[in-house]
Image (cartoon, rainbow, N blue to C red; front, top):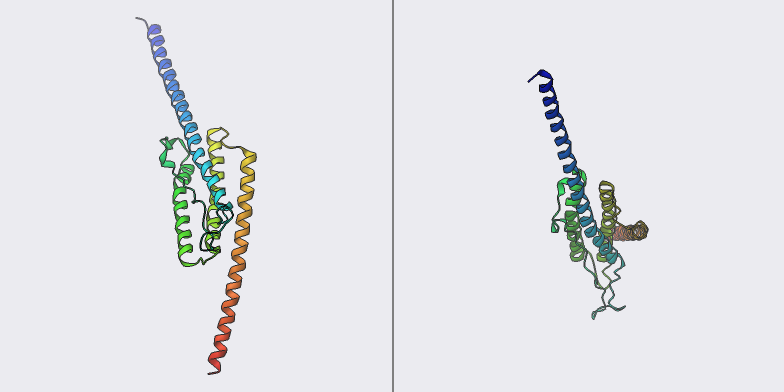
Length: 212
């Protein structure tokens, strides 16, 4: 066996290793892309339902078929939406770490919002309209709906697949943004009124104390 034959053999082996390496890399990237696309479709579907749940919360005026309850009070007619990404079996490692963290943190944000609303219901809201309670629901879940929209957009970017109708979701976002603005204004007005009432009460008590 001459040296030329040996060299040809070595080159063949080397080329074979290179081709197999690129083949494995291509197959791995393809498999990862398919898994990421599947994940994006599954999770965006959950987020889509969550967004419409937030819209239901925003639209809830506390009336059942246009009527108050038997006590003349408003009552929530829809539950706050849930987001449970771990309910679907997907490969989370196919996502960029930052986006994965956002998605897996989001259920905790929803949970904290529900705790806040429960505390408002128990300690701050008063019948018959329960204004603070309904405002708290909008205060928390309208922004969460906006966040869910942005998460879908991030999934679209990493999967290169359109996951949501841009026109429809744009209208929903406008509605959510409008409700955020309205509820923030209402809360500022009430806080200002409460501060004014407290100031008047303090002044009155000071005068009464001075006259003793």
